[in-house]
Image 1 (cartoon, rainbow, N blue to C red):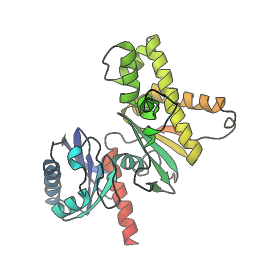
Image 2 (image 1 turned 45 degrees about the vertical axis):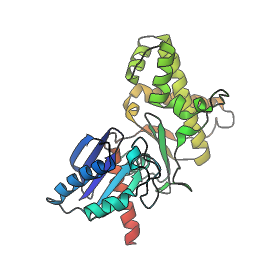
Image 3 (image 1 turned 180 degrees about the vertical axis):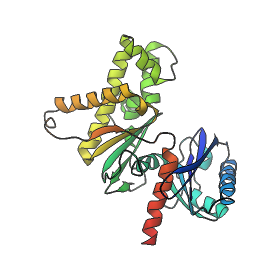
Image 4 (image 1 turned 120 degrees about the horizontal axis):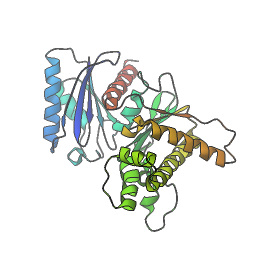
Length: 301
């Protein structure tokens, strides 16, 4: 058995998986405020599992810049984990092998293990949520870059706002929270916190919702097309809560195709299909364990 741990800014999810990736048990709890509390709570659950099962190893998914040795240069919103080697800390406390993976990478690689990207060697994955994270899988392996920062698609510039360049980024134009919801609320004067409300209003004929959504879909499609042109993936997998919205996916695919039709150099080229991720809330757990298994297989060879 393996234990997958998905450490998020608001909650921590822990799952018990067998060799085939089947989830045998799952637990979650609010993310504590201190490093010691986070590690102690995780270790306690792993210790409970060890009383009933043989635990071969632990895979951990965590936000931020994750170095290959498990050192967390950053950890997203979880400031208390900045600058620690979580792999060493957890291995010492649990007595088993530990592997650590960036959360967007974990969610992406999970799709190779029974998800949307089975048998796909080269694909692009985006997680559309508060911001936009992502991952490139090249020849069945995560491409990490020179500084473990590959896949930060959200900071791509989509145009040139000379007053504030951050407003030109994919994050602030095409993420669900700091993109779509932020822009709609600025224009409406409201405080909507659920993208489904905007989609419902658009369906009911509200002009503001329709125009904001049209720009949102086009900007997200623009970012995806930029990366697809550079890396030529076989597939684009979209994750995050909004990926379950069928209207979102349909409109995004239409905007993506429209951009290709408008771009004279690309109009006759084949581009990768955009598909929704299969794994949602369990993606971090599953991906952490699958990344762990890949690492163990390499070491055995």
